Each structure stands twice: as structure tokens, then as C-alpha cells.
Length: 547
Image 1: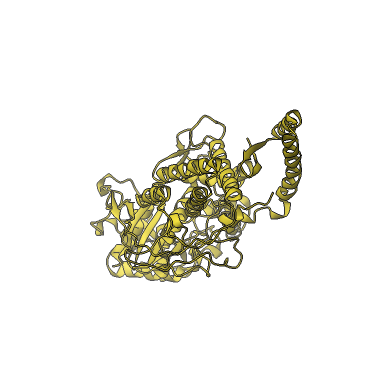
Image 2 (image 1 turned 135 degrees about the horizontal axis):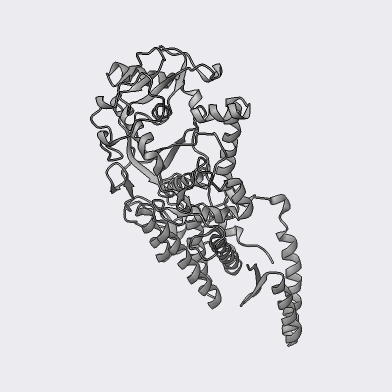
């Protein structure tokens, strides 16, 4: 049995240098995307870009309405129309990890959310620049490395590599750039001096070398979180030595006795290291400019981290982020997943126990502003990993079945009929990344696609298959994409199993032709006992794994 699925699911990667101009209409019939009034000439399939399999491109003369993307902006507490600074480019900064421990599902949810956002923006024709920092110097890193008897930079680098592995394991496209805090001390010193000169920061008078942001000097402080200054607790990012006000936060931390000399840098105020909040303002400004489109992170960063970033950046005269996006927590038994609480589910462990694509599906299928309860052992819990695995099996079964039935991607000369499933998917994604409704549209396309296969309707089956492939591209779940296609290629026994099962199905077909129903049923039952589901189609029997 030839696996024709790859002819449809080896889609163009969003960052492929061979990708056509983003203003060219280059999607499947269900995923066309162009500015209103643009038109292109009809054409058949193109050759595959290097390293891709069976990529189908169709171009037709068509006028498309302008589709508006709306996103929830934490700063205004409202869903706003997204209008980027530049017509064809979107700039995104999202806060990376403090690399002091292994990444868990609570961390990686943010990576998946912003990966989906990036893919959707790229689908819509934007060039997307993503910067996500690595905080590789921090109080916790120093404390844990001392407890381990390990150099602080060795511990940070070890967990940074684990973070990259977690990115890859869930099919996330790496950031455009991933700056480390320790590599940007000059930019942090420059910003700190600007704030001192502007009267919004001061050097502690006790000779500690600490520098603090003066919260009371900035009337807008609290605008992102909606909190009032007189209701805030003292800032906990540094000890209170030398502070004018307990709520003032550290921009620069003077070197303390007992801390490694390597964990400090020279400054006008003595040796020390940057405060956590300062790092992101300096790095975002260096790579995205004083003003950029979207700043994101987990909801727990809204205050104090993002509030402090906004205050120090705005006080220095920088526009900073125009939209703020925050994803909700992953909880266990109602508690935020946290290393300090000891209730984490490590990405490396969860992806060993479950299909990594199912883990990604589990994290993206609820709305990004909704809390996810992690309940891997409870099959009856909606959204559990067990249910996510079943969803992935359903997707893959349809992709394989429909591709084999529809055949290779034939040239198409007529304009395709509008596909309502992709239209519903796009509408959901444009409504503040409404992945629950988008996933519902995905499975409705699969349902009607399966009906088309059963009815022998190749045109409809192919249309639904292309729609599903386009949706999976956006969600980062397409099994034929580079992120997933080559996983465990060296140990893949699918061709061997396919050959053995194919031989048995040929024997079963011969028995059915001879009206030897007992023999045919015996072969079917034998295959079913091994976990294989046999489906009879007008073009012959197919098989799939059944859980």
C-alpha cells in the first residue's frame, strides 16, 4: 500500500527561504490569503521546495475580503483590532525562561501559544520577527548553583539546552533571535543611566552599589496591571537596603560578599549585575526598536515583571509594546504549575509518556486565556492528554485515508469552490486566536472529508484534505512538516508493517472474491486483535492503528 499522505501533508515551512513572496497567493484553495483586490493567474502545482515532499500550490484569479485580526490587549483590557507598525512585518517579544530548572508544561504553554500566533500571522502574509530572551543570571540561578556545587553559568547553560529541546519536542519554530541577559550588560547600563539622568532612578546611598527605579516618580505606574500604588506590596526582587520606598524595584544589584566574582560586571556604581526587569527592556529595544508590536508572556508576569518593564521603558522615553498578550496558567489540582510548589510536569517526561503532537494539541486547543488543568490520568476529563492522543489519531487516520483515496495532487485548472471549514477556522483565529472554535472547524472538515471518502467523492475529499492540511500547518500539527516528519526516521517500522499487512489484505481480498467469508473474517479478526482497524473502501481495504 503506497503512503500517499505525504503528497498532501508535506507543506511549506513558515521560515523556508524558498517560500514565495508573502503577498503572493500561495496557500491551498481553502487557505488563500491576499490583500483585498489582489489577483493572480491560475496555475497548477509547483515543484516542491528543497527538503519538502509533494507541496501543492494553486494560484487562481480571486478577490478576497480584508480579514481583520483582533487580539485581547492586557493594557486596555479589551479586544482590539491588530494594526502592526509596518504594513508587512510584525515584531514580537515574549519573555523567555530564567534557566534555573528543567522546563515544565506551564512554561512551554507560552511557547506553543506564541508559536501558533506566529504561524497565523505568517499565513496571513506577514514577515514575523520573534525575540525571546534567556535570563541566564538571576538570584535563583546563583542559589541553585551554589547548592549543587556547580558554576552558575554551567547550570544556566545546561537548562538552556533543555529549553531548546523542549521547543523542538513540541514542534515550536525557534525564535528569530534568543538573546542572553549576560550578553547585553552594556545596553542595560545605558538604560539605567538614562533613568538616573531623567530623575526616575537613584543610586542607593548606603554604598551597596544598588540602583533602584523610583516608583513614585512615575505617575503611570500600575497602568498595565490596573493596580494602585498604595495597594502594592513591597518589591521582592531585592532586599530593602538603600530604598527610598519599599515598592521601588532594582535596576542594578551591587555585588554581595560570597557571590561569585564571575557573576558581576563593572559599572559606574561598582561591580554588580542587572535586575531581572531591566534585562527585557534593554534586549527588546536593541533588537526590535524603541517601539514594537506585541509583548507577551504568562499571566503571572503581568505584575510585577511586565509592569516594571513598561514603567522603566516609558520613563526613558521609549514607546515599547503597542499590544500586551498574556496566556493563562497550566494548573495541577487547581494550583499554578510552579517549580517552587513542586507540582510540575516536565516536558521531557510528558513527551516520553504521550505523543508529543498530542501534548501540543493539549496545550493549544483551549483558548490561550483559559486555564488548563493537567489531568493525565483522568480519561474522562475533557482536554486530558489521553483525549488529545485520540484526537491526533483521528487527524492522522483521516489524512492517511483521504490522501490514499484522493490520489496524488493533480493539476487543477478551475477556481476552487469556497471551503466553509477553512473560512470558519480563519474566522476563529482572527477572533483573538480562538483555537477552540478553530479546532472545531478542523474536526468538522475531517468529518465531512470522511463522508466524502465513504461516498467515493474524490473532489470533495481532496478539498477537505487540503483544508485540513492548511489548518494543521497553522496549528503546528501537520505530521508532514519538517518539525515532525523526520522524528525517529531510523527506527520507523511503518514500511515493514505496511508490507506485512498489505499481504494479509491481499489474501483477504482473494478470500472475499472466492466468497470464502470465513477465511476473510478470520484475517480481519487477526488484524483487529493486533490493534489494527480495517476499512473497506471502493478502491480496496485500508488499515490504521486503533486504540
